[in-house]
Amino acid sequence: MADKVFHDFQDDGIGDESVIGGVERHRAVDLPAGLALPDRLVVPARPDSIRAFAKWRGDRPLVVEVGAGKGRFLVSLAAQRPDLRFLGFETRLGLCAHVLERAAKAGRDNVAMAWGDARFNLPLLVPRGTAIEAYLLFPDPWWKRRHARRRHGAAMSRAIADALVPGGLLVLKSDIAEYLAAMVAAFDATGDWNPTQAPDDLPLTDRQTRLSFQGTKSFTAAFLRR
Ligand SMILES: C[S@@+](CC[C@H](N)C(=O)[O-])C[C@H]1O[C@@H](n2cnc3c(N)ncnc32)[C@H](O)[C@@H]1O
Image 1: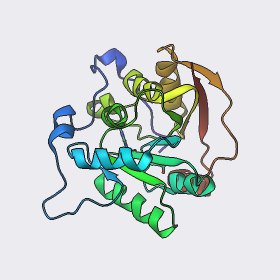
Image 2: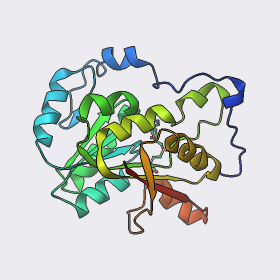
Image 3: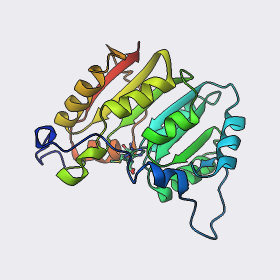
Image 4: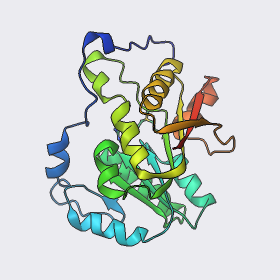
């Protein structure tokens, strides 16, 4: 993947960063008919799932991950820190279910998943300034021009910054140096962040595990919420 050319497309007038699938879809779309709502899955169109999440979280410290994928990172961190609550955001329903199954198999009851774009779901689920850490690890680079508005920029930065407490940690990782640099520039330009060192003992993600197997480098940046 990393040998492809990452085009910025900004000068092409691609338009503003957008919620994947659109805001209306997030407000309206329920689970496919006949599918029961799994415990600790939040579906934004289901107020009962939002209330259940808030009750489950209570006033415990919360860690969030945008784009949790298959959940290796989230479930590993949840195992290391059983007193915290962990909330993953994932646009793919099948992956939400996969992460919850993985957490259950690992005996972790401190992991929840929210189905949909984190730009929409973060402000819906995480009261302002109440998450202690956030992770955005190996996001899709959306190589094609027609998908480039899905990339993470100022809108994702705002959603994460609003969720975090002052001093809260945000870690970004990518194997595409140009995408990481573009995210860092966009996030930095919001004025919400101070640069910091990322912890060097974080668990690997699923993608990172594959990359390190292939000898592909990954790049990291970290910020503290101002
Ligand atoms: C390349 S995968 C990486 C997954 C995981 N972080 C890893 O490193 O293995 C990126 C994941 O982010 C999800 N995703 C993309 N945009 C998202 C968004 N705006 N909100 C929530 N999830 C998103 C995708 O469905 C995909 O599973």
